[in-house]
Image (cartoon, rainbow, N blue to C red; front, side, top):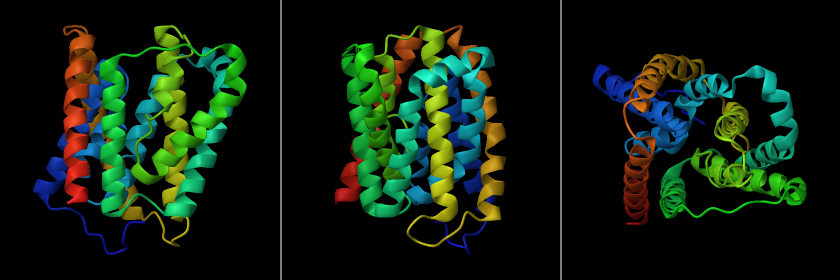
Length: 258
């Protein structure tokens, strides 16, 4: 977990971190996902992945809870994807016990690879449909894999988003399902970081305070993204986002390798 002596960043560094969350919030506001992905990708360029993962907990949790609305349809959606959510928790905690919190060059490389895989899948636009009879066993399996990826990289989207899109959900239902899945991943990761499974650390009050402080920039970014969504083509924005994410992931993987 974060070192106990980790100091409050200087004003310039704090502004840079806030800028990352504004940018990540804009992306989420436009396309409905991407806050933890963008945050992890950019913050991990100058801080340890475990520190980046700890900072995104509160902004990710609050923005995902906001995305889950309307609350009246949550129970039905939860029943459909509950097995996946159990798998997410199991995978995240198992990964934390086996590998520890996201940290070190190997985690940066895995994060880079995860970003490239996600970007390639999104750009190829390959679609497939999962028959309802397969959801009972495939959902938990996808959840476990997503949890393992979350534990070692701090990113929630691989392969969860691909699976949810393959369920044939309508747009609003898909956004809600992603919100539920991302909330589960955020809580599971927060528990893993709080107990620093396998390493005996703790989620410090300073870290929590910094994470809370990043909520406002994230919400500002989301509001701006929602404003932009009405004026830009989400498809064009998403394509540019995925290209940039893929290049960033390639850079991170190459930097970690060499």
